[in-house]
Image (cartoon, rainbow, N blue to C red; front, side, top):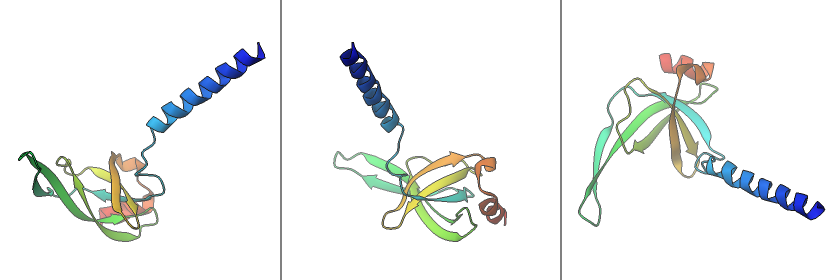
Length: 119
C-alpha cells in the first residue's frame, strides 16, 4: 500500500512539473521588465526565406521605462503590427536585448514607469 501511495505522489509531482514548465517562458526568466506605449506603426521588414516566401516583421524603436522610471531606448520586432496606443511589457536581457514582450493593461504598469510614459 505504501508503494502505491508513493508511486501516485511521484506521478502527481511529475505531472505538476510538466504542466508548470509548459507555462514558463525561458525568454522571460532573469530578464528586466521595461514598459512602452505603441505610438506609431512599426517599420516593415521583409525577409525572403529559402523557399522564396516573404516573411514580414515589424520593427519598433521606442523609449522604454523600468519600474523605477529609468529610460532606455529599445528596439524589438514583432510578427504582426502592434495595436496603436497599446501598453507593452518588454523583457530585456543584457547580452540578448529584447527577448519577449506582452501587452499589458495601463493599471499593470508601475507608477514611475507610467508617469514617464505620459510625458
